[in-house]
Image (cartoon, rainbow, N blue to C red; front, side, top):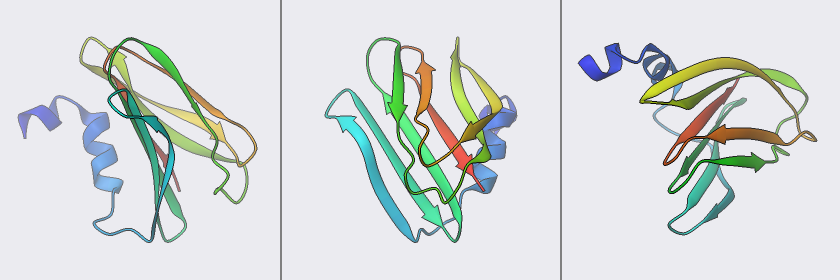
Length: 110
């Protein structure tokens, strides 16, 4: 519990995550290097990405979204730190996130 208390953005995100899903989609990935998936519960989408190796920019499309909207991005900010920030996303706009070495991100689209 101390680990979560030290990372309130991670704790906030985990409180949003449901126990069961209506749909899961593979968005992109390469074995041993990267995986990005999207999961849906009701009308809410969650996107998660994890990488292995050096810093990179992960770019993926979100065609399952019904319209453009504001979402919340929680991403690795380096040095064992997380950053939570609002982002505009939509079905025709690619999401582009720079992640540090062995990093990742999650996206909450209510």
